[in-house]
Length: 268
Image (tube, rainbow, N blue to C red; front, side, top):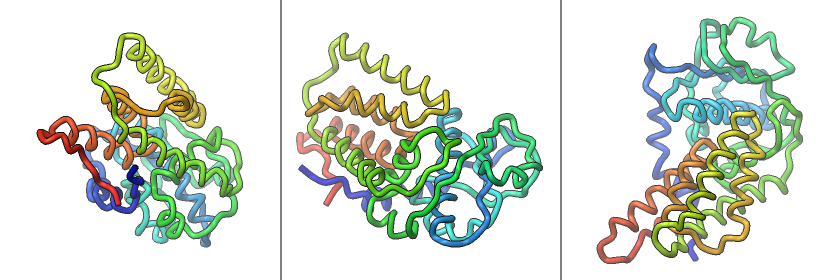
């Protein structure tokens, strides 16, 4: 069974991320207020803030939004796209539809006229962001951040949580490669619809960790997936793990369009 190669997958899709969202007055605007300071721990904390903004904005508008950040993002510029985030520096002030602001620095967002503000707790400790992304990939790091718990709480860096997120990405990929059957039966189709509704409800309650738990619970007893299940998972995982989501959709399309029945193998 082929391993999910996050480096290869990120290289494949990263240009789409770098292109970002097209700016326009008609598009919703999301804002991330970064924590001031330097150091590996601050970089990791700011990566979490960017991911939170991207997640909640994608949940609301798909990829049709503009993402700006306030603060010094120079240290994150080279790795932002590998997090699945397309964000540009923005002027502090003006209006926006959604903002994520660090709870301990509320004054940094005081000039924002924003419809929805999410005050995030702190993420303390950790190691350099570049090596972490090289080891586990952007999708696993996003899932690690989102599975920690409610955004407003404080968290310390946890290796076990990061490793678990990486294993989850690998498990989803293995299941998707082990396709079986055709369309799901009515009972399974109903379960998928219930899962999608539950994930949406929990995520909109600002509980991404419980939304992920619902997906994990569905997959817990699975040893293979049908094409319909892979298609549904690709949609559900898009705001959580955009690279994995795109690769799942591409995998399915490649298999369905493969006249020789050889399937698709984009791994190493």
